[in-house]
Amino acid sequence: SSMSPTVALPPRPRRPFFLGTWKDDIKIDQEAVQAYIGGEFAPNAGAHSGRDWGAFDIQKEVIDLCPTECMWMDGKELKIDNKECTRCMHCINVMPRALRIGDDRGVSILAGAKAPILDGAQMGTLVVPFIKAEAPYTEIKENVIEPIWDWWMEEGKNRERLGELMKRQGLQRLIEELGVDPDPRMVQEPRSNPYVFWKEDEVEGGWDRDINEFRKYHQR
Image (cartoon, rainbow, N blue to C red):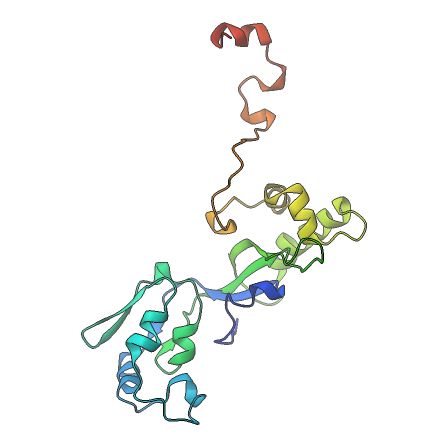
């Protein structure tokens, strides 16, 4: 799938469903990196060329602005710890002739963003970290969109958007409807709720176990 270099995580509050991403490493042209450092190539594709901003400083303008600090210079070579990259796209936008997205491309799927008047803006939740986006997009339609539609039409209240349904019934319910495994990337922060909810098949003996037998091993 093709993807604009500027499509990345920042649009998340604006209710996107698909965000272009990639799984492999960012491609680095070290000669082009040196061309930017030497002033042969204009940073930001010349977008800020109306004034004299001074010489391009890769440390200040790229490396120090990396949100996860996953970039550094090793001598004359630019290095990237790709597993820490959050796809913010800043380095690629500043040096598009030196850095390119990887070749194993697809999309991340987010759902549930909206801006209700009473509760304030609600960010989208990452429900599918990576899926290929190749025509005719059967996997996306059958494994993601249609299950979400079915769940929302069956369980959603009058005038209730998907994000409100997710908030009311919980992310776990949506994950069950999609049939996907929970992933740490789906949550923004560790939960603060101390309660653990078990399903009957996860409890030895189920809900119908003998209470007297249980109390033999759990005395009050």
